Length: 412
Image 1 (cartoon, one colour):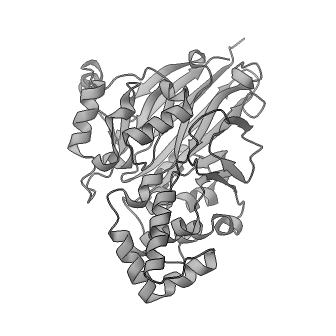
Image 2 (cartoon, rainbow, N blue to C red; image 1 turned 90 degrees about the vertical axis):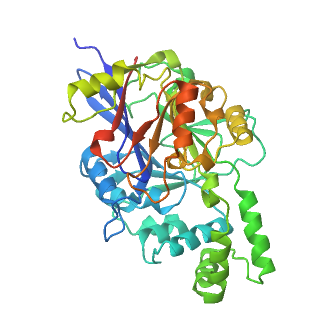
Image 3 (cartoon, one colour; image 1 turned 180 degrees about the vertical axis):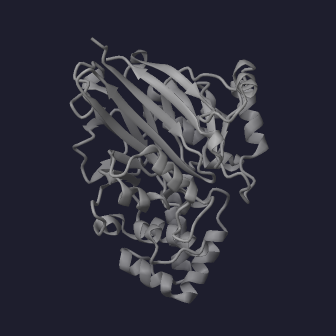
C-alpha cells in the first residue's frame, strides 16, 4: 500500500514590480487526493493591460490554478494597486472563499485613494472600489468571498493573547494575534497528523499600527480646514472637491520614502512543529531552457543555498527598522526563530530594509520589475543580504525563468 503523503508547494511567481505568491498543500493517498490553496498579494505594475491587470499576474494565475479551482484564503499586505490589481480576475475565474486584509480607518482609506488618483486610476476601477468598500466591491461578483479584516496591533506586543481559529470559522473582524490555521481535519484529508493543539500549519497575520500617519493626515486636514471624513460617502465627496484634492495630493507627495507603504500587513507561514516538515526540493529554475552548466554553477558554487527552516515571512512593502522588527519578533515568538524564507520588503528598496531581519539566516527573495523606474532592488540591499547570509537574494522579475519553487514534505 502506498504511503500517504502531503506536500507543500510554495511558489514565488514572476510578476515583476508587484507580488503574487502561492502555497498549495497537496495530499496524496491511496484513497483520495485533496488540496488547500493560499495566496499572498495579487498584483503588479509591470505589463498592465487596458483592463488594469498585469498580463504577468494573469499569466501566473492561469498557470497555477485551474478554472473555478477553490482558493481557501487570499492575504493582501496593503491596498496598493501593484498588490491588488489582479484580485478581481482571481475572484471571477476561481472560487475564492476568503480575503484577509488590514483594517483601514477613514483617513487611511482617503490617503490610499489619493494615491490611486495620482496614479491615474478611475473611481470606476475595481481597485478604487475595493479600497473604498471591500465588502460592497465583491458583492456583485458571481461567488463573493468573505472579507476578513485584521485590526491593528496597537501598543501590545506581547503574545499572551494569541488564539487559534479554524480557517473555516473566521469572524468578520480578526484581531492581529489570531492565527489563521490549516486544521488537522478532512479539509486537507490528514486526520492522523499530530501537531500542537491539533493543527499542523499556521498563518499568522501581523498588522502593526498605522495610527501615526493617520493622525498626521487628520492634523493636516484640520489645518487646511478640510472636513475629516468618517465614512465612504464623505471620502468620495472630498475627492471630488478640486481644491481639497489638490491639498491632499500635496500632502501625499510630501510623505517620506515608504509613505503609506510603511504599514503593510506581514504574514508568517510555517509548521507548528518544525521537525514535522522537511524540504523535499528547491528549484530556482522552473523551465528547461537554461543550460545545465548554468544550473550547476548557480547551485554548486553556492550562490544560492537551501533554507534551514520551512517557515516563511511575507512582508509586502513593510518598512523595517530595528524597533519595529523587535516588536514583530516579540509578538510572533517563537515563530520568527524558524523563518527559513524571507521576502525582502518593497521590491528591495533600501528605505524599507534593515539587516536585523536576517538573524535566522533565511533564504531571501525580492520581487521587482526588470526595468522599473524606481531602481529596485537597491545595490546596497543586495550586497548587504549577501554579506549577512553568505548568499545572494533570489531576484524574481517578470521572466518565467525567475520563478522559485520550494517543495516541502510534511510528515503525517
